[in-house]
Structure formats: C-alpha cells, structure tokens
Length: 523
Image 1 (cartoon, one colour):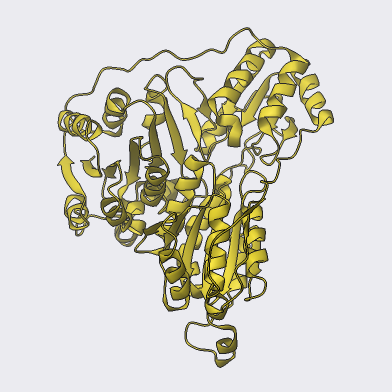
Image 2 (cartoon, rainbow, N blue to C red):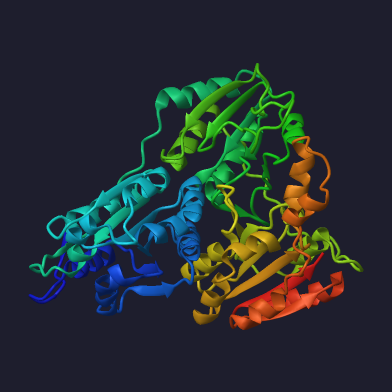
C-alpha cells in the first residue's frame, strides 16, 4: 500500500524521512536538535500531523519516548544532536531497551564530506549507539527511505526494540524526487513453540511446588486473568519478575506480587520452589553482587522451564497452556479496598495509603521512588484500576521523563509520578516540558534529602555505615533541595507537605484538577 504524499520536486531527504515515519504511525517526535538537524527540523515544520515535543536535555527526550511507547503501544521518534547528544541520551535508552520499548532514534551527524575534517563534535556515533540499540544504520541521500523503513521495522519487532538511524546533514538537505511513502505491515510476533508449551504443561501436572513467573505483555489484565485461572487449576504460584515495563493492576484485576528486590527476601521467597516456568520473564537474579550471597535467587535444584520469551506472542502462548492443562472457571479479581488514611508524621506508608484512596480510575503510575516508594505496591492491590510503569534498567533519571511521555500518549488519563529526590535531579528539566505541553501529571517527590538506597547498599555490600566523607557523597541536605522553588521556576505549580493530613489534602486536590502539579513530600 502506498500514500500519495503530494510533496513537490523540491523534496529533501528530511521530507522523505518525515513522510515515512508518519505513514507508519510514528506521529510524535521528542527532540533536542542542533545545527546538523536543522533540515530535519524544517521538514517537521512542514508536517502538522507530527507532534514535536522539546526536551531540555537528551535524557528527557529518550525517557519521554520510553514512557510514550509503553502506553501508546507504538514507537515515538527522537531527534538527537550528534554523538554527544546521543551519549547524553543513552542511560534512558538503556532503560527503554530493558523495558522492551519500541523507539526510533534519529541522530544527526555532520555532512559526509565534513567528517574527514575532524570538527570538534565529530565522534564514532555507531560505536556509541550499538550497545544500547538492536539496530543501527547510517543513511545517505539515496538510501534514506530504505533505511528509515528498516529502522521502523526493527523498532516494531519482537516485544519492541531500539532502532538508531544516523542522519548525515547532507542526506537531510539533499533534494530528491518525491517518492510515495509505504505503509509497512508490522512484523508478526513469534509463534509459541508447542514443545515448550507441552513441557510447561507437564511441569504443572507434576505436583511439584511451582512458580509461574511472567513479564512483558503477559502483565496485561486479559492475559493475567487466564494465567490466574491456570494457577488455580494447577496449584502454582503466579508472580511478576522484579522490573517490568507495564503492569495492569488494581480493583477488578489480579493481585500480583513481584520478585522482591532485596536478596534475602528473594531467597526466602523461592526457598522451597522446585520449578519455575518463565513466560516473557527471566530467571530472577540479584541486582548486584553481595559478599557471601548468591547471585541467583533460585535454589540450585530448581528446574527452570523457559516456556516463551518476550518476543513470542504471549497471549497465544498462555491460551495454549490453558487449553493444555485446564483452567479454573473464573479469575480471582481483587475487590475495591483501601486501608484508612494515616495521620500525623508523613511517611512513605502514609503516601501510599493516600494514593490508594485518591488516585482516579485508570491512572498511570510512573515509579522511580527507588527505596522510599516500595510501600505503594502492597497498599494498592485494591486501589482503583491503574497502570504501573517502573524503572527497568536501573539507570536513575527515568521517572520524570517517563511520566511526561506517558501523559503525551494518554492525554485523557491522570499520570502520577512517584519520584525519589536524588534521581529526580538527573532529569528535572522534564518539569518544563510538562508545563509547556500542559500535561496532566501529578509529581510526588519523596524528599528524604539523601540517596537513601545507597546508604542501604553501603551496609549490604559490607562496607559499613556512612562516615563524614561517605555522607558527603550520599546526602542532599547541604543545601537542601527546594523542589517547590524548582518546580515553580519551570512553570509547574507546587506545594510542600510535611504531615500525612496535608499530603492527603494536596493529593486529593491535585487529582481532581487537570494540569501539572508537584507535591514535595518531606519524609
């Protein structure tokens, strides 16, 4: 199928790039452009169907593209400036890759004839891109359409992949004959392997203590319903892996636990497990190595059955498993429920309880609260139905951009960003984008004024308690961060809460109105 673009004989390579993206549903571009990308910027100016969103730092750009794709179920484009711009963006590209996010990065480069001059911004963009990308390609004027199509197909492959297209300035500015944009058929997911389905079914019938561990699209509500019916019929335990790109939770859905983050808790969780069936998930391992503790969380004798990886059609795989082993008549949906609100001192638990009470139905929770927000998960089983998006690759600085992108993708849904204060400073510029785009995001900053997780990790690795020099590297209290002031300076209304009651009141108000709002929760 082709689309008549109607572009004139003065069409540039950048026009072809834009037309090809739009023809294939990529209609949002998160950007931080520079000189080499000006012809692409000009081409975007000729395309009113493309929504262009400026991020004031490249990590905001790629983090927003991640949050967008997780909720839109399709890739966004990013526009980055040369190798250093890509380098600034890589941490959140890493997180996106770990989340199974589809993303098309367009990285400008010097004109091809200028590269030999070794100008100051010249770098090896391919080598920078390759570790965080599934596909890397460099276009010239003649190959730009083909390379763009390859990038789109790569991004849409499997569970979602990272494609990085390098765009030399002369490829963008060169005039070319108008070419109809082709609508590409999306790649089909891999079909389930009948032998692996059969092996999982035999394991479930064996009468051993079994955990079904899931991630990826298996965490959507309809697939979880079938998985819960399978778990009931077989006596297996159903869990999610620790880090997941998107999970549907809350009242009327399955109450699903994740693998614990802490090593000792995870070891206890699987201590008597005899076999694990993986569906879109990986066998659980520790986030880091700790002296005297194992890296693998499963017992040595535990059998691992890898039924379907994330690139497989997980809905078909789960349905096939259910047909093979049988299912209970109905899933066990959790009822709407919330514990009483806390009073007095503001604590992470008080914040979680207030959220369970006041967040609206179909809210999107973007979690980079790190250590402070872990209470939310267990207190929100019976909260209003919601989506849960989390940091997946461990590279902090994703939370605020992820919430920004999710709000662009879903303008009619409230986004609630759970943000640790230390990691929030990595990409605080995202607040400006939220203000500029009038995005419906409530940001909750857990202001403990320290890298609390690193204080814990110092003990966990056997390095002791923080002394004076260590505290200088782990604490944020001299001077204290003023999140209300920073937020207002970027155009986002903000207020500070220092008690459970004041926080609940602020949250209730913020959730009842539209537009960006930040609550600095002093804990």
